[in-house]
Every structure is written in C-alpha cells, then in structure tokens.
Length: 71
Image (cartoon, rainbow, N blue to C red; front, side, top):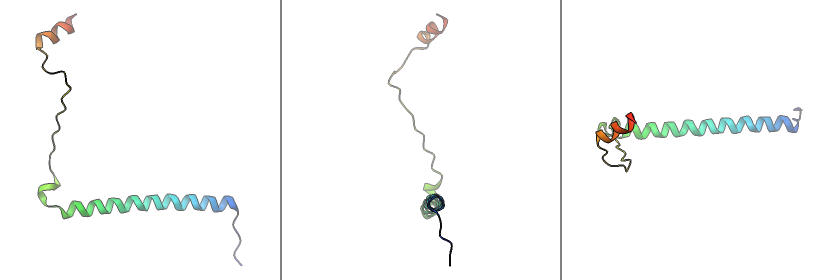
C-alpha cells in the first residue's frame, strides 16, 4: 500500500505544481509569440519605431538656458 502523505507534504507538492504550471504557461506564451513573429512578413519583423515625446515646454531660447546655468 502507498504511504499516505501529510498535509505539509501535500501543500509543498501543490506549491511546486503551481510553480511548474506557471512556468509552462509562460513558455506557452513565448511559443505563441514566436509563432506570430515568424508568420508575419519581413516588413514587420525588424521595424524601427521612433517615438518622440513632447514635454510640453515648447521652445526655450539657448541664451535663456545659458543664463540659468551661470546664475
């Protein structure tokens, strides 16, 4: 007959199985992402996206900046 496990042993086994499940879900997501990457055309693979963020300050004259640095 199989030896019965105690509650702490079962909880440890459950935690280990949940960790493995989480890892497998992550691996599945990586593989799905890889599939979509390879199915897309070459045009989409290495697209360079340049994002310019406008800080809302607008144009500040250079001489104004120099005055603040020397002050």
